[in-house]
Every structure is written in C-alpha cells, then in structure tokens.
Image (tube, rainbow, N blue to C red; front, side):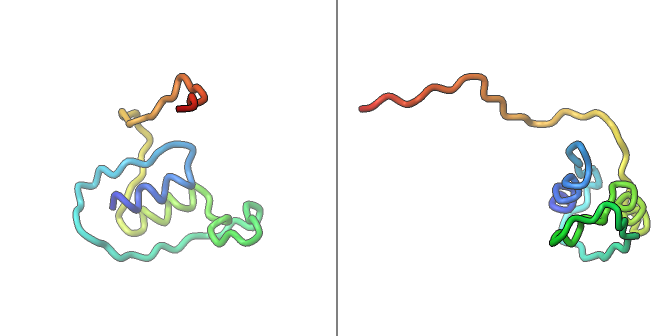
Length: 85
C-alpha cells in the first residue's frame, strides 16, 4: 500500500501518506471515468483527475482524506563549486 500511495501522489498537489497499516502485496483494479478535457497525448493516465481517482479508490474500500502530517524534506541551502585537488 505504501508503493500505491506514492504513485497516487502524482495526481495530487501534495504527498499521499499510507495510513492503512496494511502489509504485504495487494492486487486490485480501479475503474474511473476518463476526462477527455484533461487528456495529454501519449500519457495513458492523463484523463484521470484527482476526484475520479478518489472515487475509484473508494470503490475498492480506500479513502483519501486531506490532513496535515509531518513529512521528510531535504533542503539544500548552500552550494559551492568544488575546488581542484
């Protein structure tokens, strides 16, 4: 489920955190209504909108809810060119 959550984050403007506590592998199929206005050529998932994904996940018993949670972030605050040795 953790891998699925990471892949679902692609469709939202924020990270998706797995809080299901489900371990192991799961095989499920979701069906969604394709939004023709959101289509991008050569992208098979471009017609999938966040609301359609949420509804499709609900149909297999998964729920997405917006909340605040701490996440790990890498911050680079300074960069220098390396010196020659």
